[in-house]
Length: 113
Image 1 (cartoon, rainbow, N blue to C red):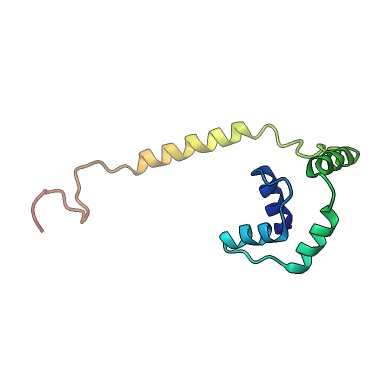
Image 2 (cartoon, one colour; image 1 turned 90 degrees about the horizontal axis):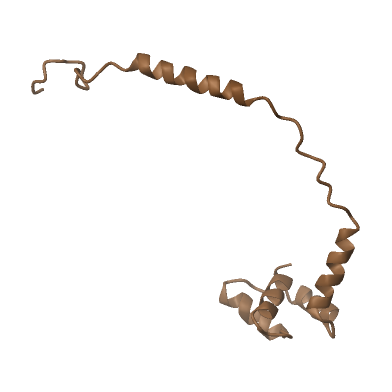
């Protein structure tokens, strides 16, 4: 997959027909090593084909699968409970406020240690 991704990036970058060396160099520039077996397979499958046409054909095939989109329903009506919880938490914090008359050791005389 990474070999295909690099191939596609090279095409987008202006190289209409990237070679194995182009892909290997681009991968090496970012610290990746190309799998020669996968690269050979990729190049043989893409030989003589236009990437734009392959993308168009693939998109048309994927459209036949449908979009799903049925998930994610329900879950409504929980907003009021969340708002109530926030109000309760704020009230608790107000009760815990002890004012500014005490230092961190509990004394209120304001003197030195």
